[in-house]
Amino acid sequence: MEHKQYSIGLALSGGGVRGFAHIGALRALEDVGIKPDIIAGVSAGSVVASFYASGMTADEIFNLFSNIDMSKFLQVDISKSGFLKLDKFKRFIEKNLPVDNIEQLPLPTIIAATDIEQQHEMPFTSGNIAERVIASCSIPLVFKPVKIDGSYCVDGGVLHNLPSYYLRPLCETVIGINVSPSKLGPIKMNVRSLAYRTYKIMTMKNVAADKQLCDLLVDIISIQQHSTFDTNSANKIAQRGYFETMKILKNSQLIKDMKL
Image (cartoon, rainbow, N blue to C red; front, side, top):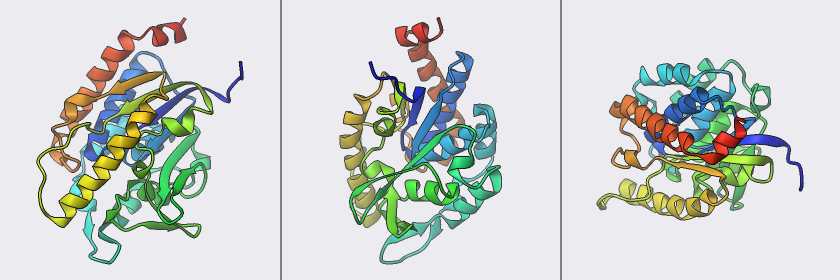
């Protein structure tokens, strides 16, 4: 059997404000003594992954983000390529991370984006963290693409909303945390809603295959009613992430074997 580079890889999906469930999931992993050797994140998952890889605990990440109004980071920028920009959020990331580049993070990290022009994956393992996280979060048509090394990059969820795809060749064990809903609410006939709904259909389709690449999957379905920008429910979402992950971990033979 081929020996892989890492023992445990942790994949954190996209999901907007539902990404607070990732923080609860990390707390559950801490409580059972499981620490990944490498972490990968898409969109909201890339935000949590970056701060966790910097050495912050789940509680420290929660305290940092729960005390701010995430909606204030959304700046209107009506242009040909998007409605909103994330310049303020980029500055927030730069201010609160102790290092500038991905390769400087203590825990190996993959920030996944999509090259919208060349139509292929962009798994970043080096370069400026904030810039690449913003690219990973840039939902097409909603946010402007981010130009990195000559490529126009958008949300990694366009191709792989659960980044187990990037970890599978590298890791003996892949744990996936999916916080993106598998159902859609009533349709609204406006440009923003239709653009976002189109994006969600794409992510729902591609995440099904990526779930199959996980040795252990935590599908946090109880947060489906929370919208992508539901900034008032951070604590509730994080709690549900914790309890659902803990339930899976306690009943997993894989986790029991890993702790022997």
